Amino acid sequence: MATREDLPGLDLERLRAHVDERLPGLLSGPLHGTVVQGGRSNLTYVVGDGTGQWVVRRPPLGHVLPTAHDMAREHRVITALHPTPVPVPETLLLCQDTEVLGAPFYLMEFVPGTPYRSREEMVALGEQRTRDIALALVDTLVELHAVDPDAVGLGDFGRPDGFLERQLRRWKKQLDASRSREVPGIDRLHDRLAAAVPVSPPPTVVHGDFRLDNVLVGADDRINAVLDWEMSTLGDPLTDVALLLAYAERDAVNLGFVSSATSAPGYPNSDEVVSRYAERSGRDVSKLNWYVGFAFFKLAVILEGIYFRFTQGKTVGEGFEKVGAGVAPLVAHGNEILKEEK
Image (cartoon, rainbow, N blue to C red; front, side, top):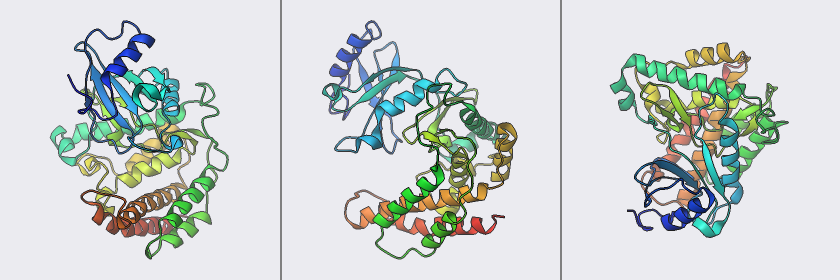
């Protein structure tokens, strides 16, 4: 049985007492648990009683901004989507009493599946299965964007009016707060984006970080669950499509923290992904280059922020000294794709 030291941020005895009070009869034996590796923000644990398994999500340890790690918000969107065709785990309880685990958390069902993170994993599946999984990923995004927010109680989940302009301002503010060096082309990229903001289609639920390693793929190569909803909101669905395309350029732009699975033989290229999404969603994708340019700008700002914190001695660990070199290729790709914008 795991001890508290084995599971930082998760007190199994307190968790057990709370679950027994809220969901009597669910647990039948002593709890054990493991930390799920791979998450970059909120903490995820798998807990079990020898008979069943469940998943606990809570914010990272230490002082964090509540709005950045809002468990109630994450719980709300997953709960709302569960009756829809979008595959998400069933939520079981939300606890906002910080006396239990020291932070709000929620409990949901355990969904089996694999979060494919590497080219090697996909190569082992073969080209056809790789293609099938990638297309299933696109189809799942179509399903998400087909959900009527009002119909599932998410009509007030975000502020879709002015969504793109607000996003662009937000990331420009982030950039300005992280300036420690000259980054050639980044201000030009921002200005070009600001000068040509497209008119958004009707708003949908937006995942905010939709990619292959944020879903669980079953043994039948179907998408069993979409995970990591902490960036979700109501907004422009094409931002999800564009980020999926930007992540697929991982090797070209040095995005080491993203799954390398998109480079495996059989994985459809960007044109195929866009065609699949457009055909199945019925959406106009003629302005998608703007969105991809914005995705590269956003990723460049994120990496520049990490580099800035590293230079300030506020980020400790291996590999951070290389992050700064990844900014320029992102900016270059963003500017290049805007040249193709008609």
